[in-house]
Length: 131
Image 1 (cartoon, rainbow, N blue to C red):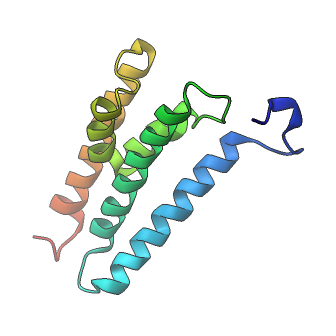
Image 2: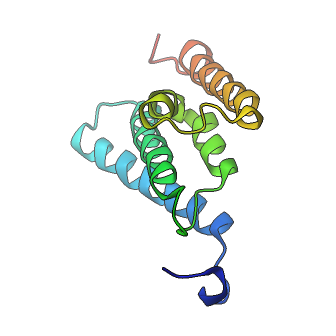
Image 3: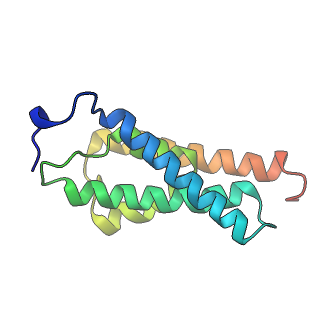
């Protein structure tokens, strides 16, 4: 195990995890658009970010009892708010992660609502081809 004193200079989980999550989400999104070119870009994004959100909650739960670097809560919340609400809502009870932490509950559910509203606004008001 690597302690925080042995980490390389410049190691910052607040930079590492958001960039990794964004990269993996974009790779999944573009891969899906290559496989299914008729899909709407937001639909492909939603599949990608829900997979990443699900995996991020699972990874964070898995390393919670170890000395490994945890996923910052703001990353979990950002993944939820940016469309990963389905993956996050499924992951929390499945992994029993962040289900009892009261300081996480309100921001989490606000992010879920924000995610649903953003997707609804896009598909109901913005996307003309979707109607």
